[in-house]
Image (cartoon, rainbow over all chains, first blue to last red; front, top):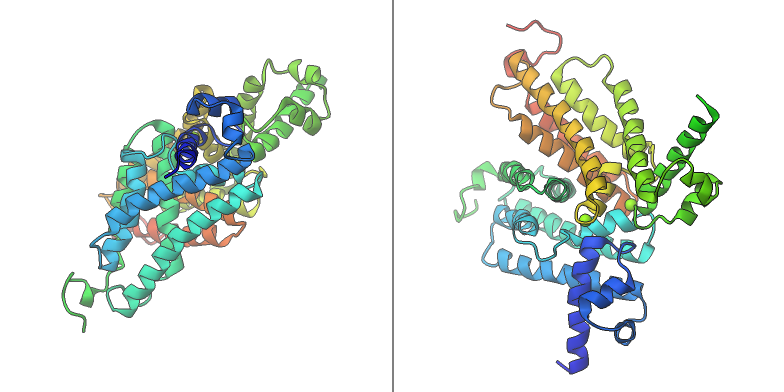
Amino acid sequence: MSKGEQTRQAILGEAAQVFSISGYAGTSMDALTRATGLTKGGIYNHFGSKEALALEAFDFARQLIQERFNEIIQDRHHPIDRLMAVVLVFRSIIYDPLLQGGCPVLNTATEADDTNPALRERAQQASSQWRTFITQTVKQGIEEQQLQPETKPDMVATVLIATLEGAIMLSKLYGDLIYMDQAVEHLSCYVQSLGNESGSQRGSLNR
Amino acid sequence: MSKGEQTRQAILGEAAQVFSISGYAGTSMDALTRATGLTKGGIYNHFGSKEALALEAFDFARQLIQERFNEIIQDRHHPIDRLMAVVLVFRSIIYDPLLQGGCPVLNTATEADDTNPALRERAQQASSQWRTFITQTVKQGIEEQQLQPETKPDMVATVLIATLEGAIMLSKLYGDLIYMDQAVEHLSCYVQSLGNESGSQRGSLNR
Ligand SMILES: [Mg+2]
Ligand SMILES: [Mg+2]
């Protein structure tokens, strides 16, 4: 990695933290110079504007979470285990934060939904990637008779993401892990309940 | 209501809308003068600072939703119907918005959790009021044998609030009612499932 590229990545890493705590409107260029140790000129050398930096910082934050998810999903083949990987990566946003400010999708969605179409689109893309993972996992699980045939893929995606994002909001609002624990307990039961009775023994051959 | 009090309430009504759309950091005093048609001096006549106005505007917004809830809860006596009133008032935040920017608790919690202790405390208080309504409803429903005795009041509060706040986030992020519809469908089943089989016929006498 070139020196310039290293600086660029370092700016993105710091900016992702600052934006996650203070939001887009709440982050000044001064705050970004303090966090990065660079001058404004030094930052503008790499990013044309605060908005351009915010968009790339969002993708940087999203990538951090994606990498953690890639570790969790390894060796999980049963659809119930794969759906639980989604629960666990959201749980880790509270239990072992990659970003001090919590979930970049939740933060960016609430701030940008009525104010910033470009940031809003990034949050939509990230949310849609989670939804696609969940719906494809459910569809494949139905095909392979591991999940009940009447399971609705889009419903599962909404229930998982809404409950987990809401639990992140509550746990951060109160500074208390209990809300995430309760969401994880509830969703574990929910995800288990999707299993096909006849095919629910993990590792058993399908009919 | 005195002229001064009328002006004060009009400022709060406009400010609640602007803050709900743009957030605390994203709202300038200029934006507040445009929305209210007053000068900065005219606003400072009634509120000492932007923060003081934001705190009262939060309570104003909370009161709007409380009044709607009071209408919905009327004549609902069975605990399942009372829990569904919570689902319906959150649904109405998407279907018939009182505030253009959605839910003040969700917006304020995500913005203020790491940045503004006073606003964060207001969001905690509002969230705790919902939690208390739900936990008391569940406890009373268990006592009166209308809900299953093993129902966990705090779990029900977290599942309802987290799922509904997450659904508001998704519906506003995509500009699509479907996510709220799915959350309501899921929570209707969940709330029904808490009913005590022996006491689940509405209006029947308890044993
Ligand atoms: Mg918003
Ligand atoms: Mg925050």
